[in-house]
Amino acid sequence: MKDAAAARSRALDAAEQLFYGRGIQTVGMDDIRGASGVSLKRLYQLFPAKEQLVEAYLERRDLVWRRRLADRVDRESDPGARVLAVFDHLHTWFGEPGFRGCAWINAYGELGATSPRVAAQARTHKTAFLRYLEGLVADAGLPARTAGQLLLLAEGAMVTAGVFGTPDSALQAREAAALLVAAADG
Image (cartoon, rainbow, N blue to C red; front, side, top):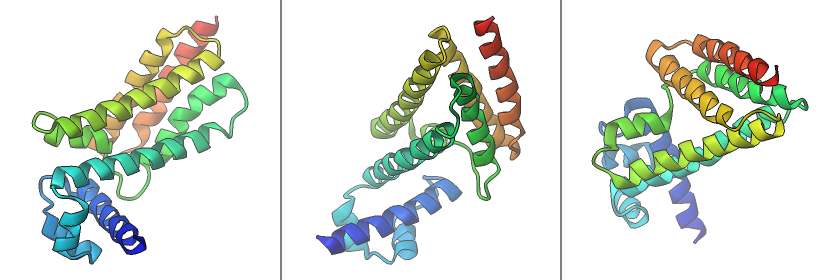
């Protein structure tokens, strides 16, 4: 059992590196085998289809992504500052080496039309992000519709940062978010 968990972890580490770095469709199970050191037989025992490996990769990445976001936001005590800290987190993330945009947007763009499991993972992740924003907005006493507006700003910043390779879109989205927060407070 312990061996299976270790093999699964190595396979997911390799999948994350390769899928995020090169794209899902360009990476085969043999590439995952080579990068993880997990035999092809064992890999298919753990993930009988590549789609299941993609799903597991996105699930695991979601947990890490949301934890990192919450860790950054939780450093702020003022409810309005907590809302804007979302964009500070995005700015940091966009500036990390190897940033290639949003894994869920990328996966959906590659496979969303043909893989219901990948489409569901993207929707689940984006819905969780929206719910998180709704909580921040409620805590700040802002109108509920503000959460959807903030989501659009954040998602637009993610796509723009991925395309242009610069973290500046997070700062621009933060400025727009600050205007939204100020207008709602005013």
